[in-house]
Image (tube, rainbow over all chains, first blue to last red; front, side, top):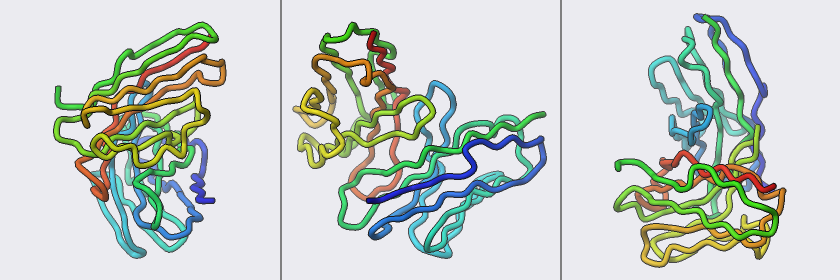
Length: 111
Length: 114
């Protein structure tokens, strides 16, 4: 069974304190790995897609990286507005188009 | 509107009632998904449409759950004889087509079954 595990479940940072969120996956064959951001009461918002080991993508203070077993979302000098739940998801080879999500990491950035 | 629209945003049902949740995807989006999200959890896949064809319904938890997209645009998720364990946020998402990666999510319909 395809599994996505995110850690930590929750993370509190001070403004400007850089850190990383982890997403490890066990799948039959990875097609794509996705990062989404979800604010309370809202639907998830797309951030990045990664397709192969070694790939990296950046957007403002966020950088996503991918290895054969896991992905990291690096947050550099976070601001309070970066507070949200960050969700990781995968699509698999031979499967349908569905995304399999992890439980998310709830990030709180204090001013 | 420019985004995915879901209605109602909030629904309270008594146990045993039937409910219908509506999703208006972004115009021109071929793919449409329904997800269920319990409090503090990630979204769980329910079903997937490509145009009007339901290509994957492996995530529907029981035969009380039914989804349709008859004209390849608006979709309805119907839950019959609701149970307390059906309480969750139901998210709809659409994308341009298969393998396009980015899903656009609506804000969800929060269902509470009393």
